[in-house]
Image 1 (cartoon, rainbow, N blue to C red):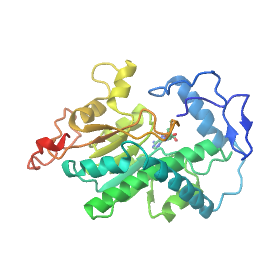
Image 2: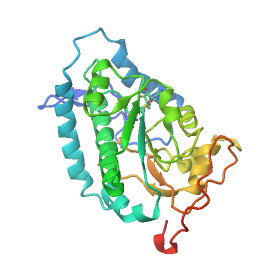
Image 3: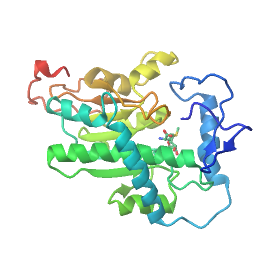
Image 4: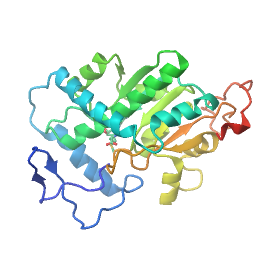
Length: 287
Ligand SMILES: C[S@@+](CC[C@H](N)C(=O)[O-])C[C@H]1O[C@@H](n2cnc3c(N)ncnc32)[C@H](O)[C@@H]1O
């Protein structure tokens, strides 16, 4: 979620992009979890997309071209990160369980009615990161990884775009049921009930989203709240997710990955246990 919201002082620069002026002279740190104010701001940002008059849908190839351009830029800048996503996965995959399926929740729309560049940019950059992870994990395992997307905001063009890339798009709550122990669950800046619904059946092998430490630090959880996230924090290894420059696209985002030896010791009767015969951990894994 953006740290600053559009103000009366928004201006368009020479390239025609809208610059968003911060209300403060100082850059504010991104907030950890959505507050009531964030929800109102998110509604303004995302809800605005639906409040506008109907318009001609954009052709899918426009969105595809936009994605190619955002994806190329993101991959280029990602490769210069001190710990890139690619190096993180290549370095640690031997000691962590493989991914066989991928579920992406709440990525936003690639086709906002008001054409908001920021809404599109966030969706494209998050898709670029998701696709890069899926491609690399599929290369490592030598198996295809099917991808499922769920986002109530999707327009028919959004759906056609994702279908054209060979992915599946489902209506809520179908994607929650698709999450199993071999899934990569990619869900950036989701609200707690969405995470709870997605983690109810099983803890995924890999998770990208707002992790336990962020929720816990806010201090409004009561004892026993958000057990599924706390359990994942205990059973999985935590990695910081590489940021996208100074933008908030991946703020407060972490990556959890289940080490090969970890059994899912859980108090949640809905969560299945892993096969107890899983190979023992390599102590040198650091994982
Ligand atoms: C705070 S926004 C985050 C959007 C984007 N991931 C980002 O970081 O900018 C939360 C998103 O969750 C989506 N959402 C709401 N209910 C959902 C559901 N049941 N399944 C999947 N996504 C949902 C909303 O439409 C919205 O796009």
